[in-house]
Length: 549
Image (tube, rainbow, N blue to C red):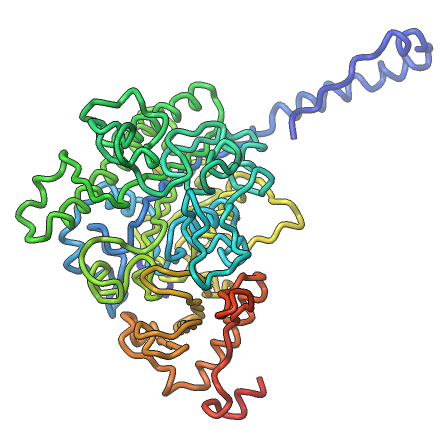
């Protein structure tokens, strides 16, 4: 089972003086004859129920938060019930618990393994292999890597690109960006979210981490980290205000403005937390001093708890404004955990999952995703149109690009007809039902270095996952191929590439086709020009009947 229960109005044109002058007695008689009909139609239309207002939308995005960085248990045991692990006991996220209780959480929700690709996928509905921003964006230089593709999209989003906020804006939404942007390098259009369809930008810029979380340090202004100083928050400089709190205050104010103006809003609230630097949030430090964890790990936990308080404050604010029952909340992380709790390829910071941010294992790509109405209210028109199961876990796989078509559908907006959308609507899954017509596949493409894992692509299809390493290394067992059965080996301990050649070949065939379908950019060879495309395994290791497929 895939769930666990726990255009403007018509305005008639005024007649011109010429048209009045040309009227005849016959014309006047005809007008008198149709006037009662017009009056009847007008009266009848007044009896029709008014269309419900479009829902408000909140995307609450947390930087570098993996699926285990929370007290909410996402993973399930053999019986299908949520199972708590030690990390769930370490972190404190009561607001996430609140949101999960009134909505649905996904335990197979995938993101790209680094931040900028995911953020652009959310705004475009496209897999990173298609939009080609396949690495985090260095704000000041092209960071393709020594063998990275020269034609990757370091420039990120442009003003002419189709984006979620621009489409919602055209439909009457006030589009609000608060927090981290990281959609393009310095001095590019993507460095300013107002070039991408947002009416308002608070704190969004070209970089991926703050110069400082501390108001006392001016969030980086006037420090050695000034090139990463968070903009637009001068009122908090020199104060004890932590960055997470400042952003929350600003987000609440912008939402209040939209509600006062009587317009629906789309709030893209993207915290810089919990990205490094791991500066402790003093509001929560005392909660972890006896944890036995390192100072950095304790600081990371305070960032998690501060983010969670922000979520709770926002939910309370929506209720205070009287719009909670008409506000849809999507909560998620942008890539796997970066908690300072162990090695990149170990079972450590995302335990029991293997790996972390930037790696090719599930710990690098599996993120928390919770969908809920800010205040569930059965019978509320928008909630009837998009019912969300409460207190349930959805185990069917989904991914970050799915937000785009889902939110457009909720708002009654369609993308351009010729626009390629890789995402699929989440509506059935959100209702707690299986979507049997939905393929459970996820393509992750990272043709770059250096990072936790270098030059790799992976493909998930149902229970199976294949990883192709363009430049084999010790991290790949010195092989191009890794193959895992995530049903029998969810923590990726047994590489089946050598013992399941037929399955390996099928998965590689589909990975190659998926990359080609996206017109992906590939790493290059030693000459710096020749694309290195993934290859199926040698014929000698694959049964003949497989090669004929």
